[in-house]
Image 1: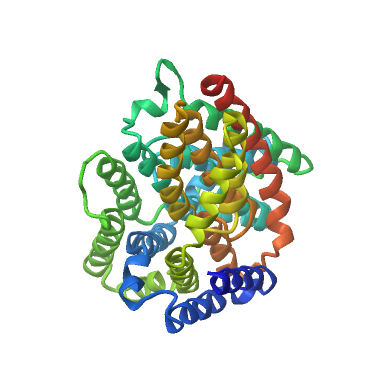
Image 2 (image 1 turned 120 degrees about the vertical axis):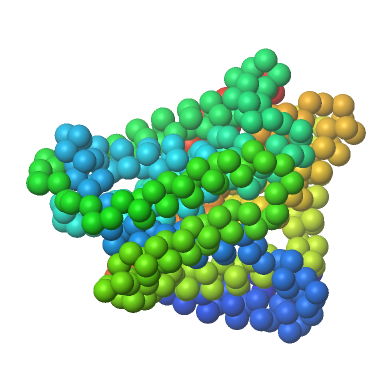
Length: 424
C-alpha cells in the first residue's frame, strides 16, 4: 500500500507540473500499476468507466456536427443581443451551464455549452480560457442538486433510498438542492466580481443563418433521452454512453444520406473533434484509481476520516465535508463516495445518530471539491481539452484563479446550510 500511495502521489504531482503530458503520465502510471500486479488483470476492465468514455466520445461527435451546422453562432448572436455587456454574457453562460447540468451529465453540459462560449469569445475578441473554466466549474457545482445530476448523487439516492423529490424536500425540510443553489448564487456573485472589468458593450450583428437544424434536434434528443433514462430503474451501466454514441451514429448516417457532396469532409472533421487525449487521460486515471483501491488506499483514508471524528457529530460532519473537498480535488469522487457511504452508515448506527447531514455533507464536498484543481473533475478535464484543441495553453494558475474562489464560495454556504437544517 505504501508503494501505491507513493506512485499515486508522484503521478498527480507530475500531472500538475507537466500539464501538457497528462495523458501520457496517467497512462504510464496505470501501466506500472498493472505490470506490478497492484491492479490485477482481472480488474482492469472493471476499473474503466466505459459509460463515461462512450458518452464523451459520442457527445464530442454530436457537438462537432452541431458546431458545423452554425447553430452555436446563432445562439451566440442571441445571447449577445440580450445581455448588456461582456461580463453578463460570461456569467449568463456559466449559470445556463449549471442549470443544464442539474439534469444532464456535467461533461455533456460542457461539451454542449463550450462551442457557444467559444463563438462569443471570438466575436468580442476576449480570452476564452477563464470563460470555459467558469462554465466547467459551474457545471460541476450543480451535479449534487438533483438525483440525476451526477453519478455520486445517483449513488447516494440508491444507497439511502432517496427519491427524485427527496433532493428538494427531505424529512419535511428543504433539502440539498437548495444548499447547492445557495452556493450557486454566491458563486455567481464571485464570477461577477472576477469579470467586473469586462464592461465593454457587446457588439450587435446580423444573426448567423443555421445551415441544418437536424444536428440541433439530435443534441436536444440526446439530452431528453439522458433525462428519461435516469428515471428508468435497472438500466445497463453503459446506457448514457450508448445514447450519446447512438445519436452520433444517427447524425453521421443522416449526413451521409442528406449531404452527399460534403458528407466525407463533415464526417472526417467530426471524428477529428473527438479529443482522444482527454479520453486517454481518463482511461489512465480510471486505472490508477482502480489500482489504489485494490491496494486498500481509499479504504484506509476513509477509515482514518471516520476514526478522526470520534463521538462529536459536528466534528465528523466537518471532517467529512472538508476531507471530501480535499480528497476529490485529486481523486475521482465516485470510488470515494462509494467507499464512504457504508462508513457513514456504520458510524451512524454505532452512535445512534441521523446520517442525513453526513450523507449530504459527503455529496456536497465530494462534488464541489473537484473544482479545486484542473484534474479534480471530468468536466474540468473536458473543458481544458476543448481549450487545448483551440490552441489555448491553460496554465494551472489560470484554473486556480477561478476554481479556488468559486469552490469556496459554493461549499461554505452549503456547509453551513446543511448543518443548520439537518445537523442542529
